Image: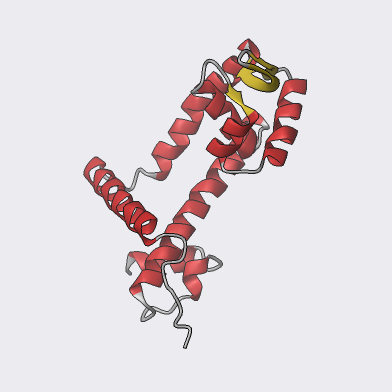
Length: 175
């Protein structure tokens, strides 16, 4: 049995399983990427919920703040997490209420605020990171280090190709 057949038989409800074997290769690759990303995300979401009673968006926000010891503005958080400022505001409000992060006026512009991890937030995040890393390690255990490096290089090449294509890679003829 091929890897394609195994994936379809073990998870027949994913996007990939609806694609015929003779469909265009580009479509199959795109759907494989989506399927893998969704499977990884589902594992991480479930693990965070079960082990730490935290959502993936909250974990991601804490991770961004952990990488920025001086804190981040709401706009910077929004850009890094690729979500709207409105979504960030609700997350920040809840994490402030829980004492995991703190909001303070930005020293250069008091109209803006900077958000930082509190000591309690840092401790909580530091407790989650080795467990999160172990989950990712387990999910990628089927690949050798060389295969992961090759995959990373191929994905970088794909990313450059996508960026070069621009926002509208196929222009329709106006005839």
